[in-house]
Amino acid sequence: MRDLIQTRRLQITGGSTYIVSLPKDWIDELKIKKNSDVTLIKNSNDSITLFQEEQSWSGHGVALVGVNDSKESIRRKIIAMYLSGYKIIEVKTKGMEIPSTHRSVIRDLVRNTLMGTEIIEASSEKMVLQVLTQLAQLSFDVALKRMHLTAMNMHREAIEALGDLNSEQGEEVIKMDDEVDRFSLYIMRNLNLALENVQILLDSGLKKSSECLGYRTVVKCVERIADHAALVAKKIKYLESEIDKKIFKEIKNLSGESLIVFENSIAALSKRDYAMAEKVASSVSAVIEKEKKQMDNLKASKNTAIIKLVLEDIRRTAEYSKDISEVVMDETIQSVIKES
Image (cartoon, rainbow, N blue to C red; front, side, top):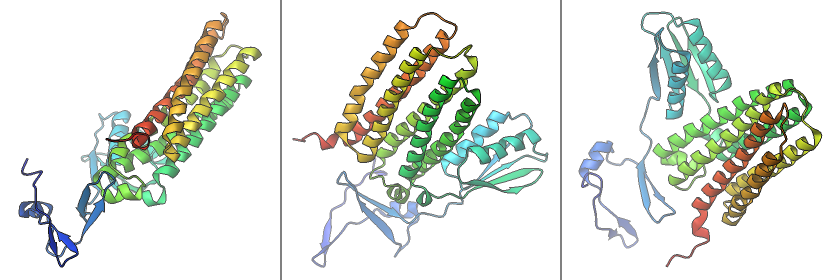
């Protein structure tokens, strides 16, 4: 424990400045030199963080691939490196040409999935990707808002396409899911960087590292809500006929209530409002109860199985919104309690 925790006595010098000595072995290990600049941060939990200016890190990672690597394996490697914070991602082979299928996977990733990433070099044996977008250019709040609005639009358009039996509109909704995934990976990347770098944490607008866990949960919930909207859109082609108007009206009403819950959960997060988040969590039970009632009232028909799956997708949207509201309550509980 001595390597991690030491107690030092605070001293005063000059009448107004307090100083504390730092262990020499720590200084040597961190490679801090005499007269080096260090930054002090007063945290909201009454602690003080001291850190040095970011050490030079190449941020250059190399992923070796072979002919036996599957397309999914290559995708996973590149996405993992992106999430880990690498600025340069190099994909190369050992003395062989990169197969055309692998090149297509990499190009599709850059085009559709990895925000702010460009292919800066390509040869027969390697492809080099560079992440150009920085956190300061697109903050957490802005990226999350874009995710939220896109997921909301996906849900609305999916329900509209369902009522019109419009498969083409449904396909457009499915494509919109890629946009949500792009923002999701971008935010996840920066959350991982924020855990390692205090300056990135502060630039993001977060006050403490523990908030990264809450944001991670929120991002996954919004991503899942978009996934369920895409699932609704995918079910359109399996309908054998238009949904009964009365049944569709009930589906649309339930969808509207679910979206209100979703929107209010994001608003509570933005305002850091415990009371609002608690109301959101409480309102979800009403959506679940209505979904159950509609399920029970469905009469057997050619479309019954599909309708039940759609109702489940709508219910899941409300349940993920509840998860978001619970994150808000966990992060803001201090605002409604009195510590003794």
